[in-house]
Length: 229
Image (cartoon, rainbow, N blue to C red; front, side, top):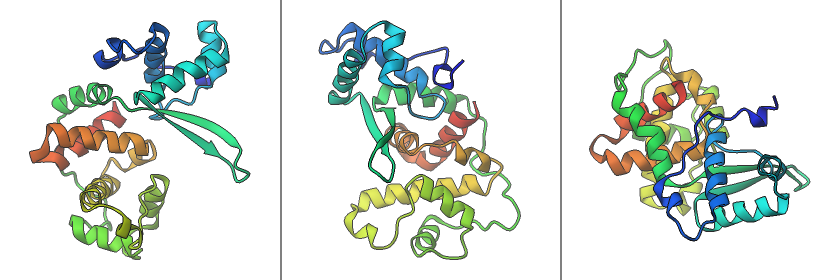
């Protein structure tokens, strides 16, 4: 079986999609198919031909369905290009918040993980501000491997970048990096290779909305449960 066809048994079509009269029935169905294909990597990389063969329609028809979902804000499309600016891969991310909640909060509520675990030796714990200061200044105190994690997730900000970012977004980035570092120095460090940027930010926004008084605790639990279940 082609890796592209190894989908999750379940797909999710939230009420916002099911009852949106602007969407055709086939568009709602393909949305559900996309959710099942995002479970492995946090995004769907199936081609229009894959969907066309699946539903016995043309690739052009599939392109119209996906473009409509993107236009209405239910998905986000990212095109990965090579050095010659040629498209090598298309990634489709789910943007609908009810889907994120469904995939996060049942796990959060049943989670038994404490906020802090015993950390590995020779890995120092910092507070949020100290950690962020060291990272934006590319300090040698932070392990090179963690910088690689930040680079992959496009969180390797320098001091100059911060001049163009709103204060509230800097605080969000600070919080996310802090939790990533906690995971890195814990027994859950291996899950960092599975995390996608899109999923990371979606989980954060959902936790912020539902658990503002204990944001970091639930955010950490949400990441652990999503990538260990």
